[in-house]
Amino acid sequence: MSLPEDERAELAAILLDSVGDGRSEADIDAAWLAEAKRRLAAVRAGRATLIPTEDVERELEALIVDAPAARRAG
Image (cartoon, rainbow, N blue to C red; front, side, top):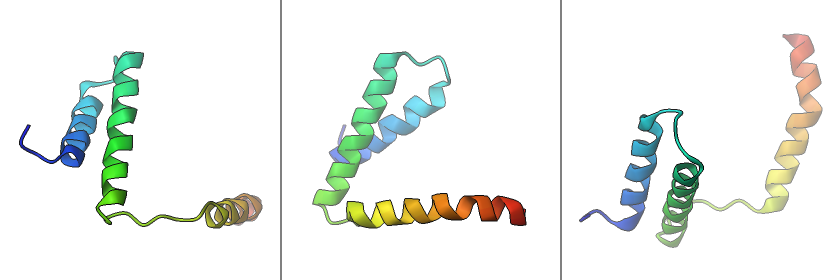
């Protein structure tokens, strides 16, 4: 409990992942919430790099367009 909130959230996510596939929906929701809090803390602390939505959309579009050519090149 003496860890900072973002580190506790990360630890909680790791522990939840180690439990196995028998997790309940509540466990999964808790893991997502812990991850969201960890990421928010990272942004607020300046440890995360934010990427504009437009840049992400351009990268995804390029991946989608290039995917068939990559599969043919195999």
